[in-house]
Image (cartoon, rainbow over all chains, first blue to last red; front, side, top):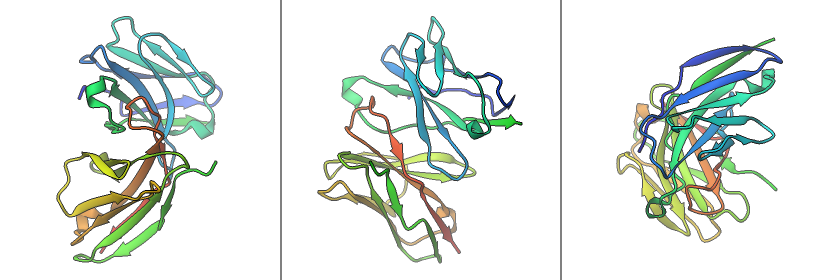
Length: 114
Length: 114
């Protein structure tokens, strides 16, 4: 499985944008980039995913580099509720390995200061 | 729609005992996965079930087992508990088995082994 690298921790001020980076230099052509986050005392929750193009949803935006070796999760206006561990995960969509399995790295702990 | 539920939420056992944890997926979801979360190892995949069949297994000893029932509910069992089994056990469900499907996590069962 392809590996991702994320900074251990980041800080942000409330109401400011946050850019969470992820490196995945060994990504394959069939790997989707998924982001999950885990709020304190909760199970992880899905945030966003993409393949090649930038993606937006109500929670965040995902910017994917042209060579797909890195991506950035963007929270446009951080709130205190966004303080969580953010995980960048590659999921292979090759039909021969269909599985719900998620391989979590250490993730980035985001602190949001009021 | 109700989310993924896990019972019990907290459990204290002693070494050598066995334990059974339960997971009820979101209605209509047929895939259930289990994860172990510890401070040292992070989130690690245990196993995945789809239509009552184990489809994928993580790198855990045979003391860890699971099953899925016809109503998609799942249980995991840990026999001969060790101190190192103390962890948060998370269950996730998804509609299908595809790696494209978003995983929905429950709140977890906190197991403490004394």
